[in-house]
Image (cartoon, rainbow, N blue to C red):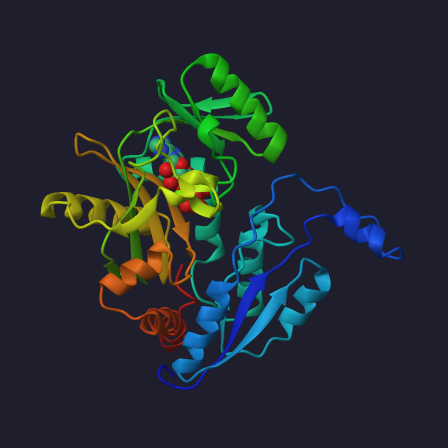
Length: 361
Ligand SMILES: Nc1ncnc2c1ncn2[C@@H]1O[C@H](COP(=O)(O)OP(=O)(O)OP(=O)(O)O)[C@@H](O)[C@H]1O
Ligand SMILES: [Mg+2]
C-alpha cells in the first residue's frame, strides 16, 4: 500500500476559550461544565496547512477533520473512512490530559494513525512518570519531587536552584522567569501557583544550567534515526533572566526574550558529545515506546553530563520548528519528512496485518 494514493485525514482539535461567554451567546445551550484553568495555546495553523500541502505533493488525498470538543465530533470520527489519520490533536476541548483518550479512541475504532499510541502519550505526558521510567533505564534526568494537594512524593534529596513546573502540561505553560526558585519561600509560592492556576501536580526539579539541546527522532522500534541535533541558544537572554525556554521565548513574538533566542543546528559539538546526546535521546524515545517521530529535550551541563528534561511524542511539525529543521539538516525536504512519517505509520499497520500481530505496542 506504501506508494499508493491514500485518503489521509488531518485530525486536529479546536476548543472554545471561554465556555461561559459562548453559552451566554447561545441562550439555548446547556450550562457548560466548569473547567480547570489550564488552557493550551492555540498554535498557528501553519503546520496543518503545510502538512496538507505536503500530502498533496506526495500524491495523497488529504482532508481536514476537526474535533471541536463536543461528543458529536467524536461520533463523526467513528464514521471516518480515511486510510490513515494524520494525528495533530493535542487535547480534547482544550484539556490536554485527554490527548491520550483521543488516541485510544482512534485505536478502538480500528483507525490507522500517525505517531504515538495512547500508552506513550500517557507516559510522556506525566513528566514524573516519564522520569521514573528514565531512571529505571539509567537515563540521567534531574532529581525531583512532586507536590499535589498536600501530598509530596520524592526519592532523592534535591538542592537549589530548582525549577517548578506543572507535571502534566506542555508548550511551556506555567514556565516563566518565576519558575526557577532559589529558596524555600520561592518554591512554596510557586508550588501553590501551579496548583491554583493549572490544577496540576507541581514538578519540583533540580535546575540544570547548561545548553538546551533537542533531538528529533524519526522511526519506530529498530528502524530509528536520530536527526542532527538542534540547540536553542539562550545565551543572549538578559542578565538575571533564567536561561530557560519559557512560554514567551517559545511563543510571544513581540517580547524581547523571543527575539533574543533562536534555534539552530548545533554544529560545534564534538563527536563524543553528539554521540552521548543522540544515544541518550534514543534510549529515552525507546523507554517511552515512542514511534514514527518524536523530540527529546535535553540539557548538556558544562561538565558534559546529559540530562533528559522531557520527551515529546508527536512534536510540532511546522516547517520553522526544531523537528523540521533537524529533518532538513538530515537532507529531507519538508515533503519528504511528512512522507517518511506516513510510510512509518503505514508500514506498522501493514506489518501488523501481515504477521497478524495487533498493532505493535
Ligand atoms: N530541570 C531543568 N533544568 C533546566 N531547565 C529546565 C528544566 N526543566 C525545564 N527547563 C526549561 O524549561 C523549558 C520547558 O520545560 P519542559 O520541556 O519540561 O516544558 P514543556 O512545557 O513540556 O515544553 P514543550 O514545549 O517542549 O512541550 C525547557 O525547554 C528548559 O529550557
Ligand atoms: Mg519541552
